[in-house]
Length: 601
Image (cartoon, rainbow, N blue to C red; front, side, top):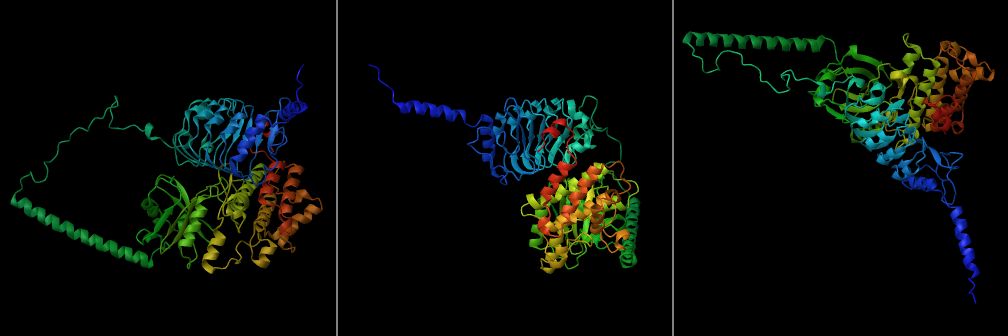
């Protein structure tokens, strides 16, 4: 007689089969491992749940419709904080990995080199450190590689030259060193792909490498040959002297000493007269002897403190390149031709105390491609100086309203708008502590090469005002850019920066200053003028006549974003992160790739 199996066994087996059929896919498991490696994901990954059967509906994830495999992970500007888990390599069908503009740290996992189908790798604007993994040279289908604006060091691997399909390559603004390889595809990229790495050398950046220098004392075989001896007088003390020659030597020595004293006295008197009546240099001439304290934040400046201070001493009125609300800006040129911008703080009562210097170090640690780098500062009894990167195209205000050589096309204006928004968004949302600029305006947006914008003077308004008055509600900023609630209360918030940015957008669109006489005479400001034309559907009258071929859709989209930024009520204005997303979605894709466009979030 057969023994009948209990019925519950059938149910147990059935339950196991059902559970297995509804288990999360291996791709989903890999993504959960990536999520668990993050300390903070800004709640954007809350919908990534273990009880889902597939990750294809998760935020930032795109799957192939036929296979169901993950082909794109797109999480830019998502406040991801943590390291990149190597388990991502299990997504072996991944074609796009975009984790840029987050707070990712640690090294780039070498396992990423196993993504055999990867076409786009975007890791820029993070805090990734260590060396570039040579394994990335195995990504033979890669078209776009951007790992710029990180903390990467070491040399650029030769293996990256194997990436024959690479059309966009960017390792700028890191701490890379050594000779730039020219093998394979790497020889086709110019300076913009490598700029901002002071330790790199090679043809691409116009720096001669030490290995390329030829020792003139070396022969053709490469061996060192000492210079031939040159006949000359015998060493001192071996030559016989007569009494006459000794007397003549003594007289000659006395005359030489007398002349030297006379020349020294004349030089002293001349210097006294120059300092008394001559051209004033505002205290730069004695900065080194006054016990100046020079602090450099980054180790990628190849100059000693003495070299920098000596060049600062040469500054005078002929080196002035601008005047701001907090001081005068000079162009400092080193002996090798490298240039920096030196801002002299005009506040006579300002003291660089411990608190102030600590805050300056915080500002100096902020690194983003659309922010001007604060390189260091100099504190002396005669001058308080801040040292920044120098950008040769000047400010947006100068380019828009003063320059006759540079005409900003509509495309260039969109690029400036997006880059400036990204820089301010980084200050508001990604810095720790967060920073309110308080003085967003066109003269605080510097224009680099290829019209790349860089926001300057961030954090300086509050730092200087608080240091002098110890009152946090002192109104900083510039007339014409200030939000109405800021004028009333004196309290700055992120939304006051958003309003000021909206003014900059109108300035970019119209080419007019906020205080342009054409509408000020009518009792309007630039906001009332632009919005009144917008309501009447008179879009073209807002547009700068120098811009040609602008589509009505693009103009209307930018005007709509500006209008949102300029809402009277602060709560109705978008955040700068939302502004960035609107600009990206409405007007441009920063990387010219069909794949990027089709899979962007």
